[in-house]
Length: 375
Image (cartoon, rainbow, N blue to C red):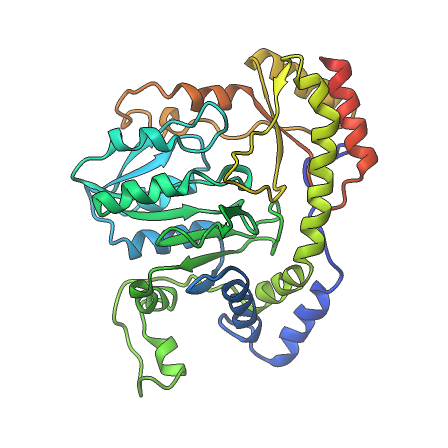
């Protein structure tokens, strides 16, 4: 392992205690006390209409695809510069993915270009809040409203981040979060579906409970439950939810430390960036920063490769990120041939620096020093 790894999962100290408590309660399957506690926390803190914990963000997106009633031939607009799950959930239902380019200023979807991608078959737009920084949600919601299109926020990286004062994940019809070990708040694996359209809540619970109305039965709303719709086993176990609850309890402390580290990177690297050596992360005036990630955009693939190599020589593990999905082996033959210049630029030039709670300010200064020497 590198002296300074790219990521190191942070433990608050209470995870094992709550997991032991979950075991002692005698109910380890999903939708127990810790699951309800986590869901309530998210609903109350961020104003989501309904939250359902899932085993991953990918599963939350799968649920969103079902709730959007995706059929073969439907079209879904997804940025090319994103993780495969953003598209895969809809591909599995038979949708055709229409890939959108990123903005020049940051890797988020270029909202001004979405309009030209819409056809009568467009069913969903999936804005991905890259690095926890908001997309232009007013523009996206306006376009979606005009064309009667659903919006599914991919907020995998965006816990505790805001757009014009509104929590990310609370703006679209649906939103998916990740609690993977690389995220700010973790459960090893884990995710959450936020449902903001009240008309989707009942069906979301049914899909979540393997296509049954079991949730209504346990609330006493029906006297028996059965198979009423499609669905799957999307619930995480109580052990996962117990771990997650310990993280939620420390959310403010975690966020405070991560922002301190992010600001230290920015302060140390800005003088070098000002010389045109690379670009620092861009924060639009409408967005807040949840310090999920610190990245640089180099001027070329060769420069990025050299920088990663130099950091590795100094026992620092820095990594690139997504490869454009429109040119992936799985989907390139189905892409319509448009050149997505910005997406390809980020694929070639973006590098992510170590960012995790237990990183120290001295580590950040050391990494910044290596970058300064290398460039």
